[in-house]
Image 1 (tube, rainbow, N blue to C red):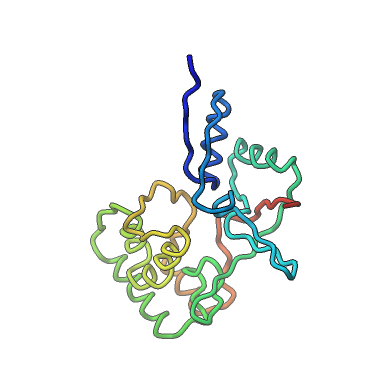
Image 2: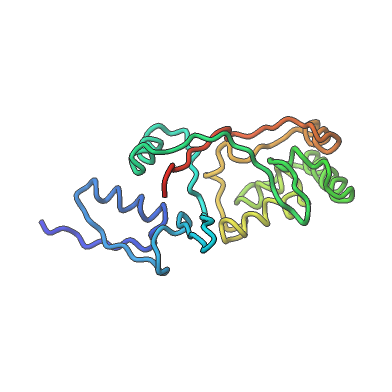
Length: 205
């Protein structure tokens, strides 16, 4: 039986994941990329000053043992485990992550509108969730959704939230109680609640 001719478009993590799976089945695909380099968002570029700039997700915080081992093997077990420290930049402010728990320090009118919308959404009849945008509105209210996660979605996922499903969410985005939102708006010492505590990063390359 002849080996099938298979082409993989894109050489990011998804493309290499597909090629890896095909290779385990004895198939060697041809891979193409629209860029002059491979790696997609995992590419790195070294500036003349020596600074190494990562375009995207070199870090791994998966808890899946199979994927952990796959990534570790790909760098010959040469990786660092680093405690995570997240914050965000928004219009001149540096709110801690996740922002929904750390509104303290943002403009007063933003905080008031976010909390007002959050409360109104909690009191409204449950809305049908057909996509990620619906989920954001029902989880946080319109103001927070439009000011923060919807903007991040366009930047990171390069599409709009209403064009995304919700099956990928899992524990990724924390849904706070009203008490947690208010406490984080009043106090700079609100607790850090995030499903990621550590990440791995290649020691070299």
